[in-house]
Amino acid sequence: MSDCIFCRIIKKEIPATIVYEDENYLAFEDIQPLAPVHILLIPKRHWENTADLEDGAVFGGLFAIGKKIAADKGLASYRLVNNCGEEAGQTVYHLHVHLLGGGRLGGFGV
Ligand code: 5GP
Ligand code: ZN
Image 1 (cartoon, protein in one colour):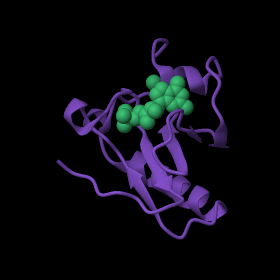
Image 2 (image 1 turned 90 degrees about the vertical axis):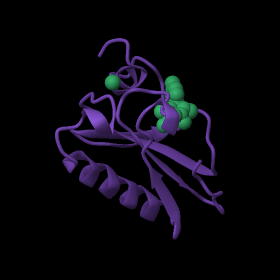
Image 3 (image 1 turned 135 degrees about the horizontal axis):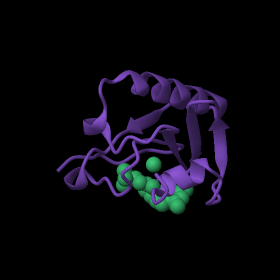
Image 4 (image 1 turned 30 degrees about the vertical axis):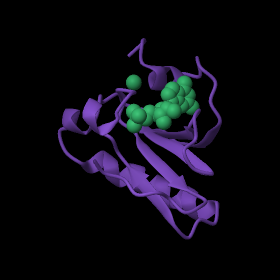
């Protein structure tokens, strides 16, 4: 989608600090980090969010990449998070998983 920020990052129209890329996935540093390590994991195909998926297969790839990046960075402890919908805090409507770590993380919920 031409007006999607993350699709534009995939096309290298907007700069980002890319930490992983393959045929189907991209990972890059979050522009407003909420933890010492805050990386966004995205599929190159545009889905709006989890509710837009036919099935959950893409999360297998996203979590595998999160696990690999965490291992590469020497993180023994980390969090993988997906926000689906406005009330859950979703602000960018291109499916993504946050990889958070590098320090003690706060709780989450309502
Ligand atoms: P959400 O709130 O939708 O779960 O997460 C969206 C994330 O994208 C936020 O943490 C926000 O900081 C990040 N973000 C928004 N725009 C950009 C951008 O242009 N570049 C990068 N690297 N991150 C972005
Ligand atoms: Zn997109």
